[in-house]
Length: 287
Image 1 (cartoon, one colour):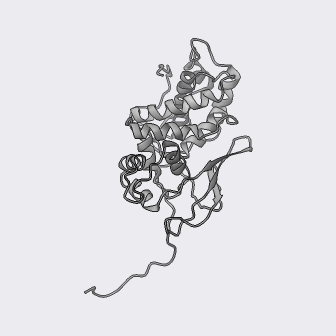
Image 2 (image 1 turned 30 degrees about the vertical axis):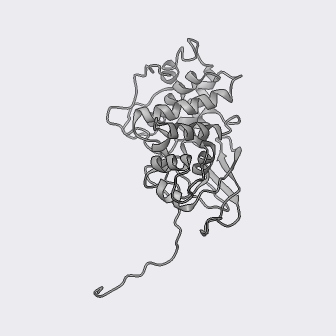
Image 3 (image 1 turned 90 degrees about the vertical axis):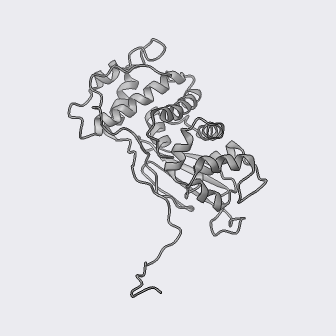
């Protein structure tokens, strides 16, 4: 799924690329974000913790045109200890959960689909660790990535909105091969759900998605003084659809959307705090 993008105005060497995704502040009962959010309710944690187990969570995305798209995801009952170990070593934790060998729930084998729903809905999951996991090539990571994208309903979303939503769910890793694996999975899912449109080819969606990410950097980076024009953007995508050009109105719409509203890919990590209150300083010597 590779094709050269002949842009004379690409970001200069050394310009920071997309290394993370915007992570909304999450709460179990209600969450709002300009990019995406989650809301849900559930009974007490079956494993004795104080966290609720949400039977179903809504992933909420606000589109450029003001419309709101919601996706419902059923949440598996995964112990809190698994979340803590995931944030330390995501790869080992997922492998153990798939084999039924995790210390918190020995004998309980989770499926890739269950773990995908877990990382989609668990507010304590590190989005940095999640992005690193999704980009790996081992069997357990591939199973979670496949189920992760399969859980997303992108039918009502234009490609730029689908990208905004997708990149809000985890922090994009910095390694090119890892980004490629994630974007291939995204492109295949989007193309499958838009089979009767000009974006029904996974190869086309893959190249166009990369083009939009590059345009986003070019349009909103202060380091880029000569911004890419709409003509340059369209020229770099000539013949991208199996030798044919994509419709000019579609490219113009995508160009205007990205230039008008940045895809914010945050560098910071947000994980909800479990404890609230004042910090008290203890004075004097501690024996």
